[in-house]
Amino acid sequence: MRAMVTGGAGFIGSHLVDALLARGDDVHVLDNLSTGSGANLDSAAELHELDICDEAVEELAGRLRPEVVFHLAAQADVGTSVERPTFDAEVNVVGTVRVLEAARAADARVVFTSSGGAVYGECDRPAREEDDPQPLSPYAASKLAGEQYLATWNRLHGAAHVICRLANVYGPRQLPSLEGGVVAIFLDRMRDGQDTEIFGDGDQTRDFVYVGDVVTGLLAAAAAPGGGIYNVGTGVATAIRELHRLCAQTAGLAQEPRFAAARPGDLGHSVIDPARAAQELHWRAETTLAAGLANTWGALG
Image (cartoon, rainbow, N blue to C red; front, side, top):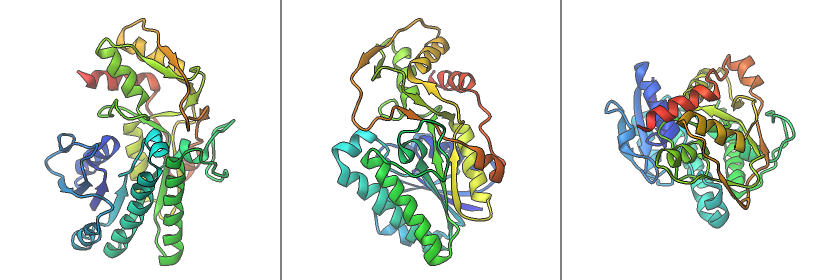
């Protein structure tokens, strides 16, 4: 299969590229390298240094004719979206429309990575795909808008694009500079002997899913017969203070965090229910949090 991966030089994207190459696919990466790095990529993948908002994306797709476009490129930082909502919308909404039109030019299917935690908002139980979205940040609103464009293209053009709402993804290659990478931040600081910080009281919960499991979920979604929305997570709630304890344990430390004020747009509880993916895609997360943290720590060197 010929595949195009937007954001393919980034954290999740580069792991997806590795999996596609491992099964013998022809892989083209579209990335502006603002947060991604060519060092993440196997030389067998062809890198096209291009922004998803660029008109040339449509021409490139029309020339390459990929069968599937995995759309991972995004502005993914909640804080940035609060400070620069126009920029957030340009990347996550306009950029997604550009990718949809590029895929249409190539008659390709799109697998779109959305954010389960952000789109659903506060939840008192694991969120299901049919739950009413309640975005609490511009980032969440822009990802939901991207989902709506995909659904519209499915109705308007008879496409079978699919949406994967990801939980909090972690694993090797995640940048510690981005807000969503709390595991990367904790482990990176512990490795370097620096203090660690929790925003809020630490009782807020998240659904942490290992990047390798996310990749298998994306591949399963691409192979599904129709469009739709799938949660890609574990369904397990982990408090941030417990995550910190597990990270310290993994690093062989007895480190305690300091606490700071909660940030605007941060959720108290965010866990997603993966039952639909298990039933329809025959996918489930296989990596325990302890194993995933060990893999991530080992990759830090």
